Image 1: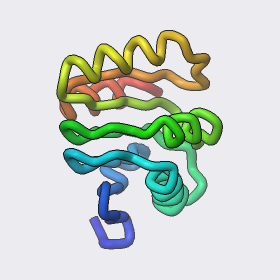
Image 2: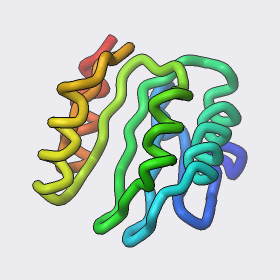
Image 3: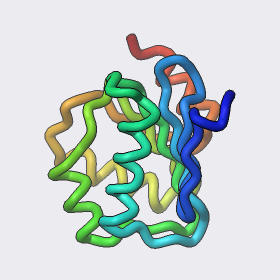
Image 4: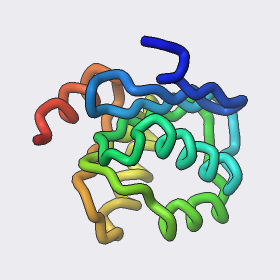
Length: 126
């Protein structure tokens, strides 16, 4: 992988890990702000080169998202084929499952507890 296929930010690392899979890993113990979401969307735009991809998002342990950032993300989503959220703690997974049950989604979303399970599910989506 060449350096141009990776975006490094103070709160995340984003890269293309397979031909059509964008991977973003957030650091542990951070609070995501609107600006962080904008940076991650910009990283997606740069790395995807305008192509619609599958996304694997891995959240760090004890990381949170501010209400304003969550609301911004809801209003300004990027076009994707499918999305996996990796959350290592059961409490975060339960909250995410409940959250997505009450949202109208434009693409398939899955909550997983490991990278391996997440990538396996994404590979199964055509």
